[in-house]
Length: 298
Image (cartoon, rainbow, N blue to C red; front, side, top):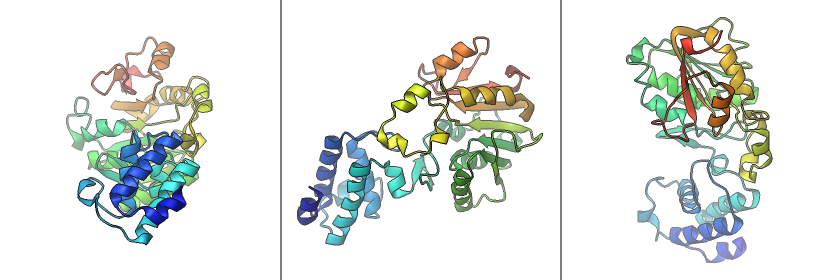
Protein backbone atom coordinates (compact mmCIF):
# COMPACT_ATOMS: atom_id res chain seq x y z
CA UNK A 1 0.00 0.00 0.00
CA UNK A 2 2.85 2.41 0.74
CA UNK A 3 4.34 1.61 -2.68
CA UNK A 4 1.08 2.68 -4.35
CA UNK A 5 1.08 5.81 -2.23
CA UNK A 6 4.54 6.78 -3.44
CA UNK A 7 3.29 6.61 -7.03
CA UNK A 8 -0.01 8.42 -6.56
CA UNK A 9 0.00 10.90 -3.66
CA UNK A 10 0.89 14.45 -4.56
CA UNK A 11 -0.35 16.97 -1.96
CA UNK A 12 -0.30 17.47 1.80
CA UNK A 13 -4.04 16.79 1.75
CA UNK A 14 -3.38 13.46 0.03
CA UNK A 15 -0.82 12.54 2.69
CA UNK A 16 -3.14 13.56 5.52
CA UNK A 17 -6.00 11.41 4.26
CA UNK A 18 -3.71 8.45 3.62
CA UNK A 19 -1.92 8.63 6.96
CA UNK A 20 -5.08 8.96 9.07
CA UNK A 21 -6.54 5.95 7.27
CA UNK A 22 -3.40 3.88 7.84
CA UNK A 23 -3.10 4.94 11.50
CA UNK A 24 -6.72 4.01 12.21
CA UNK A 25 -6.39 0.76 10.29
CA UNK A 26 -3.28 -0.19 12.29
CA UNK A 27 -4.89 0.69 15.64
CA UNK A 28 -2.01 2.89 16.73
CA UNK A 29 -1.83 4.14 20.31
CA UNK A 30 -1.05 7.77 21.10
CA UNK A 31 -0.01 9.74 24.17
CA UNK A 32 3.52 10.85 23.25
CA UNK A 33 2.56 14.35 22.21
CA UNK A 34 -0.79 13.81 20.49
CA UNK A 35 -4.02 11.98 21.36
CA UNK A 36 -5.47 10.97 17.99
CA UNK A 37 -4.65 9.91 14.44
CA UNK A 38 -5.38 13.28 12.82
CA UNK A 39 -3.13 15.32 15.11
CA UNK A 40 -0.37 12.73 14.92
CA UNK A 41 -0.48 12.68 11.13
CA UNK A 42 -0.46 16.49 10.93
CA UNK A 43 2.52 16.70 13.29
CA UNK A 44 4.60 14.10 11.44
CA UNK A 45 3.84 15.56 8.02
CA UNK A 46 4.49 19.18 8.98
CA UNK A 47 7.68 18.31 10.87
CA UNK A 48 9.07 16.22 8.01
CA UNK A 49 8.32 18.96 5.47
CA UNK A 50 9.88 21.63 7.73
CA UNK A 51 6.61 23.55 7.93
CA UNK A 52 5.21 25.45 10.97
CA UNK A 53 3.64 22.91 13.31
CA UNK A 54 0.68 25.15 14.11
CA UNK A 55 -0.31 25.85 10.46
CA UNK A 56 -1.70 22.95 8.44
CA UNK A 57 -4.53 24.59 6.47
CA UNK A 58 -2.46 26.91 4.22
CA UNK A 59 -0.42 23.97 2.94
CA UNK A 60 -3.10 21.31 2.39
CA UNK A 61 -3.22 21.71 -1.39
CA UNK A 62 0.47 22.34 -1.92
CA UNK A 63 1.94 19.94 -4.48
CA UNK A 64 5.06 18.18 -3.23
CA UNK A 65 8.23 17.01 -4.90
CA UNK A 66 8.55 13.21 -5.19
CA UNK A 67 11.45 13.35 -2.72
CA UNK A 68 9.21 15.16 -0.21
CA UNK A 69 6.42 12.62 -0.60
CA UNK A 70 8.90 9.79 -0.11
CA UNK A 71 10.39 11.44 2.98
CA UNK A 72 6.98 11.75 4.62
CA UNK A 73 5.94 8.23 3.68
CA UNK A 74 9.18 6.82 5.12
CA UNK A 75 8.26 8.33 8.51
CA UNK A 76 4.60 7.27 8.29
CA UNK A 77 5.52 3.72 7.30
CA UNK A 78 7.85 3.35 10.26
CA UNK A 79 5.19 4.70 12.59
CA UNK A 80 2.75 2.04 11.35
CA UNK A 81 5.15 -0.88 10.88
CA UNK A 82 7.31 -0.52 13.98
CA UNK A 83 4.86 1.35 16.26
CA UNK A 84 7.62 3.83 17.17
CA UNK A 85 6.31 6.87 19.08
CA UNK A 86 6.27 10.01 16.95
CA UNK A 87 8.65 11.78 19.32
CA UNK A 88 11.37 9.20 18.66
CA UNK A 89 10.83 9.51 14.91
CA UNK A 90 11.29 13.28 15.00
CA UNK A 91 13.68 13.27 18.00
CA UNK A 92 11.78 16.06 19.68
CA UNK A 93 9.12 16.45 22.35
CA UNK A 94 7.25 19.48 23.58
CA UNK A 95 6.14 20.59 27.02
CA UNK A 96 4.02 23.63 26.31
CA UNK A 97 6.19 25.98 24.26
CA UNK A 98 9.43 24.24 25.21
CA UNK A 99 11.09 21.82 22.83
CA UNK A 100 13.44 19.04 23.98
CA UNK A 101 15.62 16.58 22.15
CA UNK A 102 14.65 12.94 22.86
CA UNK A 103 15.62 9.48 21.73
CA UNK A 104 15.07 5.97 23.07
CA UNK A 105 17.50 6.50 25.95
CA UNK A 106 14.77 8.48 27.74
CA UNK A 107 11.02 8.41 28.14
CA UNK A 108 9.12 10.95 26.10
CA UNK A 109 8.48 14.04 28.30
CA UNK A 110 4.81 14.45 29.19
CA UNK A 111 4.81 15.44 32.86
CA UNK A 112 1.96 17.44 34.38
CA UNK A 113 4.56 19.02 36.67
CA UNK A 114 5.49 21.28 33.75
CA UNK A 115 2.20 23.17 34.07
CA UNK A 116 2.76 23.70 37.80
CA UNK A 117 6.23 25.09 37.11
CA UNK A 118 4.88 27.39 34.42
CA UNK A 119 2.70 28.98 37.10
CA UNK A 120 5.68 29.11 39.45
CA UNK A 121 3.93 27.24 42.28
CA UNK A 122 2.98 30.72 43.44
CA UNK A 123 0.76 29.58 46.30
CA UNK A 124 3.79 28.03 47.99
CA UNK A 125 6.55 30.19 46.52
CA UNK A 126 5.38 33.83 46.38
CA UNK A 127 8.91 35.05 45.61
CA UNK A 128 10.64 33.06 42.86
CA UNK A 129 13.90 34.86 43.60
CA UNK A 130 14.01 33.19 47.03
CA UNK A 131 14.64 29.78 45.43
CA UNK A 132 18.38 29.17 45.33
CA UNK A 133 18.65 25.35 45.11
CA UNK A 134 16.36 23.00 43.22
CA UNK A 135 16.46 19.31 42.29
CA UNK A 136 14.85 17.18 39.60
CA UNK A 137 14.92 13.52 40.66
CA UNK A 138 14.73 10.94 37.85
CA UNK A 139 15.41 13.72 35.36
CA UNK A 140 15.50 11.63 32.17
CA UNK A 141 15.80 14.10 29.30
CA UNK A 142 16.42 16.93 31.76
CA UNK A 143 13.19 18.69 30.81
CA UNK A 144 11.93 19.40 34.33
CA UNK A 145 15.37 20.48 35.52
CA UNK A 146 15.46 22.98 32.67
CA UNK A 147 11.97 24.24 33.48
CA UNK A 148 13.03 24.63 37.12
CA UNK A 149 15.97 26.77 36.03
CA UNK A 150 13.72 28.89 33.81
CA UNK A 151 11.08 29.32 36.52
CA UNK A 152 13.59 30.17 39.25
CA UNK A 153 16.21 32.33 37.58
CA UNK A 154 18.47 32.65 40.63
CA UNK A 155 18.53 28.94 41.42
CA UNK A 156 21.18 26.34 40.74
CA UNK A 157 19.58 23.04 39.78
CA UNK A 158 20.70 19.42 40.13
CA UNK A 159 19.34 16.91 37.61
CA UNK A 160 19.79 13.40 38.94
CA UNK A 161 19.13 10.08 37.26
CA UNK A 162 20.32 6.52 37.77
CA UNK A 163 20.76 6.11 34.01
CA UNK A 164 24.01 7.30 32.48
CA UNK A 165 22.59 7.15 28.93
CA UNK A 166 19.60 9.27 30.00
CA UNK A 167 21.97 11.88 31.42
CA UNK A 168 23.71 12.10 28.05
CA UNK A 169 20.40 13.27 26.59
CA UNK A 170 19.88 15.63 29.54
CA UNK A 171 23.31 17.21 28.95
CA UNK A 172 22.40 17.87 25.33
CA UNK A 173 19.17 19.63 26.32
CA UNK A 174 20.88 21.60 29.08
CA UNK A 175 23.48 22.76 26.56
CA UNK A 176 20.80 23.64 24.01
CA UNK A 177 19.12 25.89 26.58
CA UNK A 178 22.49 27.43 27.52
CA UNK A 179 22.03 26.42 31.14
CA UNK A 180 25.22 24.43 31.72
CA UNK A 181 26.38 26.90 34.37
CA UNK A 182 23.22 26.49 36.44
CA UNK A 183 21.98 22.94 35.79
CA UNK A 184 24.21 20.07 36.92
CA UNK A 185 23.54 16.49 35.74
CA UNK A 186 24.30 13.93 38.47
CA UNK A 187 24.31 10.16 38.03
CA UNK A 188 22.61 9.03 41.21
CA UNK A 189 20.11 6.50 42.53
CA UNK A 190 17.73 9.14 43.91
CA UNK A 191 19.71 11.04 46.60
CA UNK A 192 22.61 8.58 46.91
CA UNK A 193 25.24 10.73 45.15
CA UNK A 194 23.94 14.08 46.42
CA UNK A 195 25.52 13.94 49.86
CA UNK A 196 24.02 16.32 52.40
CA UNK A 197 22.62 18.76 49.83
CA UNK A 198 19.38 20.51 50.74
CA UNK A 199 16.97 22.07 48.27
CA UNK A 200 14.18 24.63 48.31
CA UNK A 201 12.24 22.71 45.65
CA UNK A 202 12.41 19.04 44.70
CA UNK A 203 10.37 17.71 41.78
CA UNK A 204 10.17 14.19 40.42
CA UNK A 205 8.42 12.29 37.67
CA UNK A 206 9.66 8.87 38.83
CA UNK A 207 8.89 5.38 37.52
CA UNK A 208 5.33 4.63 38.63
CA UNK A 209 3.92 1.96 36.28
CA UNK A 210 2.67 -1.07 38.20
CA UNK A 211 3.65 -4.60 37.23
CA UNK A 212 0.15 -5.30 35.90
CA UNK A 213 0.17 -2.14 33.82
CA UNK A 214 3.65 -2.94 32.48
CA UNK A 215 2.35 -6.25 31.16
CA UNK A 216 -0.49 -4.44 29.40
CA UNK A 217 1.57 -1.67 27.78
CA UNK A 218 0.97 -1.21 24.04
CA UNK A 219 3.92 -1.45 21.64
CA UNK A 220 4.49 2.31 21.52
CA UNK A 221 5.27 2.45 25.23
CA UNK A 222 7.56 -0.57 25.06
CA UNK A 223 10.01 1.51 23.03
CA UNK A 224 10.64 3.59 26.16
CA UNK A 225 13.33 2.47 28.64
CA UNK A 226 11.75 0.08 31.14
CA UNK A 227 13.97 1.47 33.91
CA UNK A 228 12.10 4.77 33.64
CA UNK A 229 8.68 3.11 33.86
CA UNK A 230 8.75 0.17 36.28
CA UNK A 231 7.33 1.09 39.67
CA UNK A 232 6.92 -2.39 41.14
CA UNK A 233 3.87 -4.33 42.23
CA UNK A 234 1.66 -1.31 42.97
CA UNK A 235 3.68 1.28 41.07
CA UNK A 236 4.84 3.01 44.24
CA UNK A 237 8.23 1.38 44.80
CA UNK A 238 10.29 4.44 43.87
CA UNK A 239 7.72 6.90 45.25
CA UNK A 240 7.99 5.28 48.69
CA UNK A 241 11.75 5.70 48.66
CA UNK A 242 11.37 9.35 47.71
CA UNK A 243 8.97 9.95 50.59
CA UNK A 244 11.31 8.18 53.02
CA UNK A 245 14.43 10.11 51.99
CA UNK A 246 13.30 13.59 51.00
CA UNK A 247 12.95 15.39 54.33
CA UNK A 248 16.67 15.40 55.05
CA UNK A 249 17.27 16.99 51.65
CA UNK A 250 14.69 19.78 51.92
CA UNK A 251 15.19 23.18 53.50
CA UNK A 252 12.79 24.04 56.32
CA UNK A 253 10.44 25.82 53.92
CA UNK A 254 11.08 23.45 51.05
CA UNK A 255 8.46 21.62 48.99
CA UNK A 256 8.31 18.28 47.22
CA UNK A 257 6.31 17.84 44.00
CA UNK A 258 5.86 14.32 42.59
CA UNK A 259 3.86 12.79 39.74
CA UNK A 260 2.32 9.34 40.30
CA UNK A 261 0.22 8.75 37.18
CA UNK A 262 -2.89 6.76 38.07
CA UNK A 263 -1.44 5.82 41.47
CA UNK A 264 -3.32 8.41 43.53
CA UNK A 265 -5.73 5.94 45.16
CA UNK A 266 -2.95 3.48 45.98
CA UNK A 267 -0.79 6.26 47.45
CA UNK A 268 -3.55 7.64 49.64
CA UNK A 269 -4.36 4.13 50.86
CA UNK A 270 -0.69 3.49 51.67
CA UNK A 271 -0.31 6.82 53.55
CA UNK A 272 -3.72 7.49 55.15
CA UNK A 273 -2.31 9.97 57.65
CA UNK A 274 -0.62 12.20 55.07
CA UNK A 275 -2.60 15.15 53.73
CA UNK A 276 -1.41 15.25 50.14
CA UNK A 277 -2.11 18.43 48.21
CA UNK A 278 -3.12 17.40 44.71
CA UNK A 279 -2.36 19.93 42.01
CA UNK A 280 -4.28 20.43 38.75
CA UNK A 281 -7.06 22.41 40.43
CA UNK A 282 -8.02 19.57 42.77
CA UNK A 283 -9.30 17.34 39.98
CA UNK A 284 -10.27 13.85 41.08
CA UNK A 285 -7.85 12.35 38.57
CA UNK A 286 -4.99 14.69 39.52
CA UNK A 287 -1.68 12.88 39.31
CA UNK A 288 0.72 15.38 40.93
CA UNK A 289 1.00 15.85 44.68
CA UNK A 290 2.78 18.45 46.77
CA UNK A 291 4.11 18.08 50.31
CA UNK A 292 5.87 20.59 52.51
CA UNK A 293 8.93 19.86 54.66
CA UNK A 294 7.03 19.34 57.91
CA UNK A 295 4.60 16.88 56.34
CA UNK A 296 7.38 14.43 55.57
CA UNK A 297 8.72 11.76 57.91
CA UNK A 298 12.32 11.80 59.14
